[in-house]
Length: 220
Image 1 (cartoon, one colour):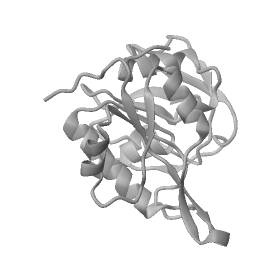
Image 2 (tube, rainbow, N blue to C red; image 1 turned 90 degrees about the horizontal axis):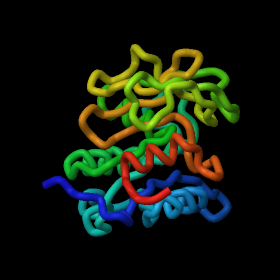
Image 3 (cartoon, rainbow, N blue to C red; image 1 turned 60 degrees about the horizontal axis):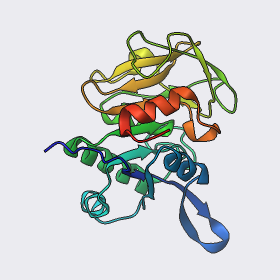
């Protein structure tokens, strides 16, 4: 049964894993700007724990209305990956499957779009000049939440996606000046991935507000 997102939806937000050696702890962490952004869009931010027995039961119990896959941590299967978190990889893959099964809207950011592409059978590779710098992005024609002219976005990723590496079910919606992929969507599903970080711009950029509205509804 298709769910209708309420005017104030409960958005589950995944968290990065940080290792704090002096306390012998693996911590789930979330940039506070995510809560600020989600609330400004009229929704309730629900940080998600990575280490749970059954992700589907967990998400069902939380009654999330949508999912945000955030940045941080390399995917563990990459040959030169750093700061990996196997428990996060497993949780997010299961969470994405749950969202697909339940027809929930998903926003996949940075690592999230990488996970999205890998989940559907695509691959990743190293990219240059995409860490801690702004660059221009153009959208493909017909993307309903984006302007026709190129825009400037932030960039914090060392791994990228080339056109030939995009999983066959996915649709390219945005491209950087160097030809690497900046946006993907699942056709006929409310699932969009972007390489830039909407939470790091305050106030939120117009394209990100429109993307949130398209996926999750609410105010902005």
